[in-house]
Length: 191
Image (tube, rainbow, N blue to C red; front, side, top):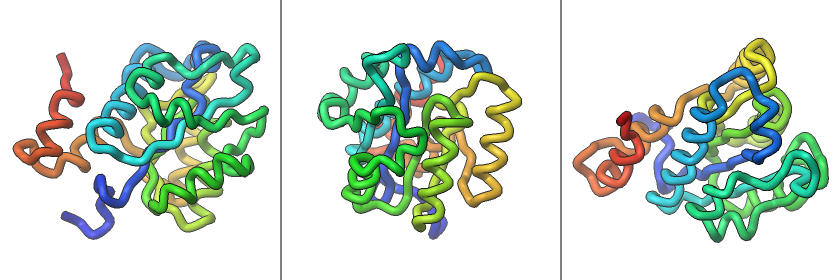
């Protein structure tokens, strides 16, 4: 295993603003695929018992609640979700920032909607604070493809690793015949 690998023992999962209303604003990617990939990330966290922080912004407004699948898959994280009152950079919200610190992990998988607003700024701050960050580009989306591409470029230039859900699954599995590999191979399912 390479020495910078993200593992179930050293990584955590942050899912930002996968809300029913917000997801409807995105056009950069097939939103059904983005939702499916966000659900895969939740299933990865559940299967491997990765620490998770969920957050939402202005749930009671047009942004709406987090997608209901997150409540089903990660009931404890859903109940403890950080409800932000409209703060764009989730790391500026004391509750979210403290929840991330409380995980005790320096390697973070991050995905969210929208990439160019709700993901970029907290990721830039996480990098500044010494976290290693992998952004799942296929579980994130923006209003335009152009905006999404520029956001991913900006995060990459700052030091984030831009990845996909299937790369995350493979990195965490290490070996499909291992106990973790067996848990993850079903999530990888292409059928």
